[in-house]
Amino acid sequence: MNGIKDIKIGTKLVALVVFMGILMFVSVFMTGNTVENINGSYQRIDKYDTQAALDAVQAGKSFSEARGSLTRYLFRVDATERQQIASEMAAQDKKIDEEIAAIQPVIESDAAKAAMEKLQKDLSAYRTARTALMQAQTAPGTPVDNLPQLKPVHDLGADLSSDFEKIAEIGTKGAAQETATLGDKISSDRVVMMTGSIIVIVIAILIGLWLARMISQRLTRLQQRADAIADATFRSLCRCSVMTRLASSRPRSSRCARTSSSP
Image 1 (spheres, helix red, strand yellow):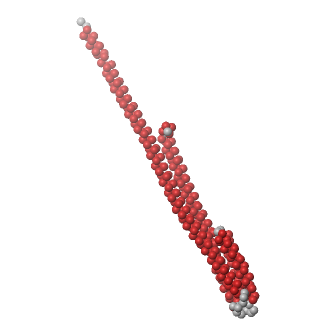
Image 2 (cartoon, rainbow, N blue to C red):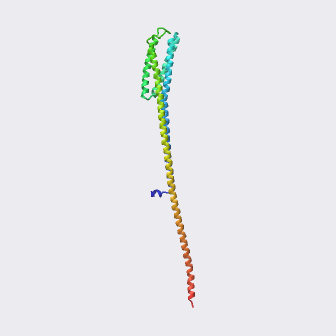
């Protein structure tokens, strides 16, 4: 402790500035790291859960359009129109496959993966049943209500619509849960950052008070030494003055003594 007291004031001030700089750097680093983590979490939610839900909704919409195209195909009589609708259905199938392929990389949960696996199986079975129904129609435009191939197409179509909705629901719920978790983490990090800031401020105040006290003590000691030196100088001057007066009065006394002793 005595070694610290003997350090020059300027050195102490420099050390204080460096120490405060380190504390501020740590505080800023922690804040930046927290912000980066929050941003990364939001990006992950947007990339995976939210995007999976949006892609599933879009794929479900495309599938509904494809089902409508099938209905139009079955009720058309003109061969040219039927061929055009069949081309539309092929393009819609390709679009659905692309949208499903876009969903696969962004699903993470086991429930979403299971739903995706079921969707792909149902989609394959639906297309097989659809082809069978189209081939079972004896003539363009004839009723298909009594055909046994109609029920599998209807049931699998309903299952596929549910599959798309389920994947979208899983993505939406996942995004909501992760957003809530992230909100809790932000609140916790805010408390940590506020606590850290308060600790930095308290440490800075304590160090400032300690340094001010040491400076004050040094100034007090200097003042005491200055007073002591001034007092010693004053006493020395007084002593010298007295001695000078005594020295100047001695010859006169001696002359008086010689004068009085002469006859």
